[in-house]
Length: 271
Figure 1 (cartoon, one colour):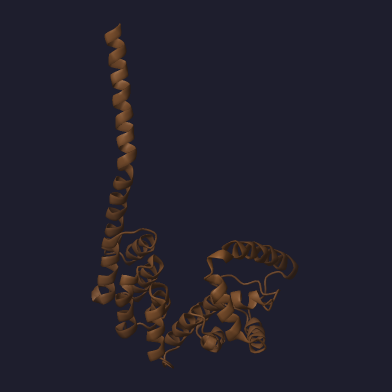
Figure 2: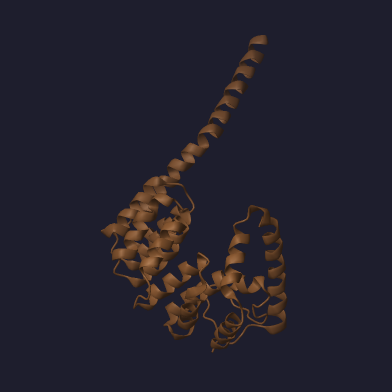
């Protein structure tokens, strides 16, 4: 009987050890499986799979995936929309050591759309070096370059590109209008919100083209403000760790306000 109990205890301890070992090894196994799947996607002959790999890589610390995307940006990836996904992923990952690869896109990528995305990625990767690049590249002829530069400047707290974004939010083709409006929503709206100048009736979402009437209203309100000072003060507040709770509460208030505005005003008709 005693031997049976000892055997049962030994088996129980063995099972517990195996479970514990599994728990300890699970993160490593998971990382290995994620890496395997990401690399399978990024090396797929299907462009949509390569894009899926880029989006997936943006949420994981996988150096092999980063290296594969950088090789794609240096000439290995023939499709512009896939290169744009690579640029987005590297920018979101935020490794400053990837800046040179993204700066190379600004120099030599044949697609202005990809270059536009690369400006935002560059700012995320290394704001100081991105500002130096911006200082060298004023007034490019391509609308996509103008949109990218304007957005990058605004993220850095320089409102000098707002007029370009407002212009292309009306004058661009559909893709340019969408990107310009997205940039305005993410970077200009918080500035106007901070001083109570965002139009209450403006019920717009990311990925939508703004009505021309809204663009004109926003332009007028910007002109009536010391916008550069607002941007400077807002950026300083955003970078202050002590203001995190305040920003969270403001975000909640703005969300409630937007829901009320949507109920009162309804969706604006596209012009």
